[in-house]
Image (cartoon, rainbow, N blue to C red; front, side, top):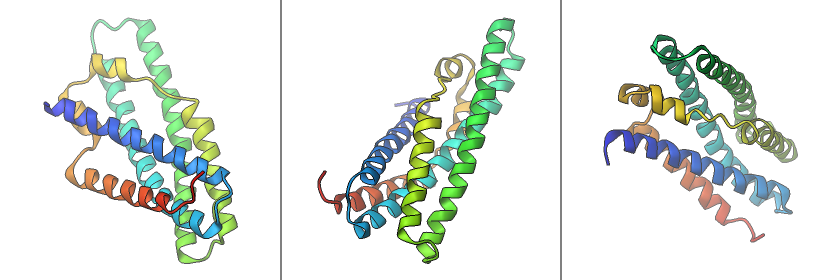
Length: 189
């Protein structure tokens, strides 16, 4: 596996982890789970979701910046293609801004819950709000930059945009595993 394959593989794995954990999170919020068990899982899942969402926002913002710069300086890009890419990047930037706000609000609620200043019902409501946001803004508005990244990116762009390093890989895996362990404590569906 070469470096580019490794970077793309790691980013893809993180996004699969996020999708799968968010599905477990969503399902747990919809089931009749004892509050004490739901609280433990939702906090562990919440820590992972905050980490992953912050990471994805940072990665995708970098994609927006780098791809816009690449397209602007590329020769042979017709006006129609440039306009399509620019519109997609503008739409993605708006989605990222909304995701950043939602993530900040959720992270603040998680901290308040951990500090004991947010009760369990309030925390669960906040979890449901994030889940609704994810469903309406992120699942429904997937931005397909892949073909453009293939056309315009080089390895330096991938290194910068992926933000993959040993520390981030370790932290992602640690938080993901903690959330999965907390999920095991939930009663079967």
